[in-house]
Structure formats: C-alpha cells, structure tokens
Image 1 (cartoon, helix red, strand yellow):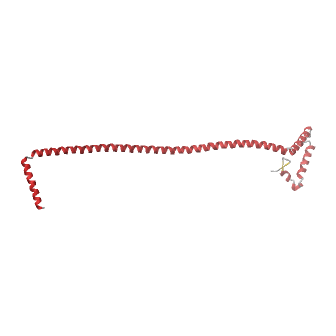
Image 2 (cartoon, one colour):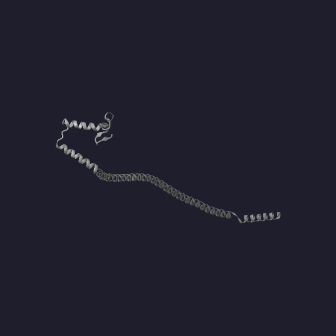
Image 3 (spheres, helix red, strand yellow):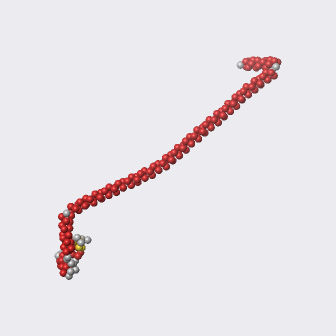
Length: 199
C-alpha cells in the first residue's frame, strides 16, 4: 500500500484520524520517540549524530540530485535493456530463420517425393515406350517372315503350276495323234458352221 516517510504504512496514520485527527500519527511518533529517548531505549551517542547528519545529507542529495542521477541510471539501464533486446531480437530472428529454413526443407522434401513419383512415372512411360517399340519390332519381324513364307508359297505354287501345266500339255500333246487332230479339227469346223448357219 501507500507509505509515509518512505517506510511507515499509511494505515498507521489513518488509525489515529478518528481519535486525534490528521496530526495524530505524527504526534504519536514524536511522543513515542521522546519516550524512547527519556527511558534511554534509544541512546543518542556520537554515532547517532553522525547517522542523523548522514540521513540529512542523503535526503538533500536524493531531493536535489536524485532526479538527475535517476535519469542517468535509467538511461544506462535503458541502454543495457536495449542491448539485451537487440540480442533477444537477433536470437529470435536467427531462430525464425532456422524455422523458416526447416519449413522450406520440409517443402523441398515433399517436392522430392513428388519428383520421385514423377521420375517413377517417367520410367514407367519409358518402359511402356520400349515395350511398344519391341512389340512393334516383333510384329514387323514376324510379319516379314510370314510375308516371306506367303510369297515363297505362292512362288513355289506358281512354279509347280507352270511345270505341271507344261507337263500336262506335253503329255497331252504326246498322247494326241495326227488322226485325232484331224477329227478334232473337222469337228470344230462343223461346230463353227452350225453356229454360223443359226445366226
């Protein structure tokens, strides 16, 4: 709470207001100090006066020079606090940079995952392209061989047919006698005449 004379609680003074008024607390202090001196509870030897003079000097210094000294000390304290604050802000910025770098590293790691997936997909596409290329090569090779066998079959069949026709004609010509040729020629002429007479 509130203090008077720097060390006495305000409640000690307000206690006397209802009995002795506003000056009651101060009168009580004076009477109590007088009692302590008269009964030699408070002995006033030579150091008492030295202490009393010290209190007066300190009171004078604190009232006259206190605000200036306080401002100087406050300025020094503010400089120390500012240095601490700069250090704290630098630490905070450093750790925020570390956090930002860690988040960036996490995003890069996720990007690496996507990159690996894309590379796997690319490899699968390359394998698919190689498979299709080889399938087409097998198809063309097999088709070429089949075409070869078909052409070979037709060529052999043509040659065989040609030779068979020649063989049949040769044997038929050998089997036809000149007499049979005359009869066949006469029959053909008759057939032509008959056809001409009808027209």
